[in-house]
Length: 261
Image 1: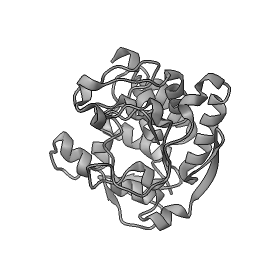
Image 2: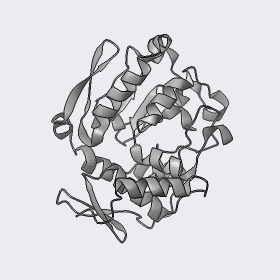
Image 3: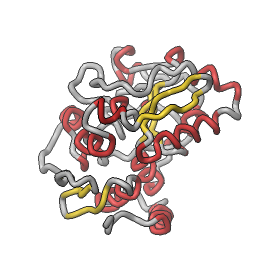
């Protein structure tokens, strides 16, 4: 069982060993993915992820050469790990089509969290968020991680106006303008106060219209707990955070510093 999921000690050793060694290999990324969801991913078997739910294997690399748009529309597991997310206290306009974490394997997300709104709802729990009660998934530690973010940010009263009211958590729906499900569909994302939000569709063009009005202390608090930020994307969505602990683990292993991009 879970033969190739990393133990906590081995994971820490890998992160330490890769801190200044550049981008991890696909095999290393897959091990970090498995270690991030130890209750779901049982093992890596060649070109497949074997999950413990008894369902069919998930193909890691479908062998197709895809454009960036095709990866966004129908990414496999390898595609979802192909760009390394940068962490840190900087926010600069991302390079064209640099969308780390925005490329997702919908097949894997459905196996991790549920393949329908009804199934996902079974694992929703309430989390207190600055005077609100938000519904998020308890699976894979997401709810616990969001509680920890709230506790960390509650120590900085000046940040509250950026955080609440939340613009939403669970909502089974496609991403605007696409047929691809949003991570909100799985109860694993949160949008914070839209008053300070900037979004690539609103700007009309991505790189030329990029800006961010959220303090980076908020971003760092979320990243510390395994969330990625939509403000790191070429197709930016600065109010958006989603729980993707594998992307943060890979970033740390790669030594990916947003201030050096």
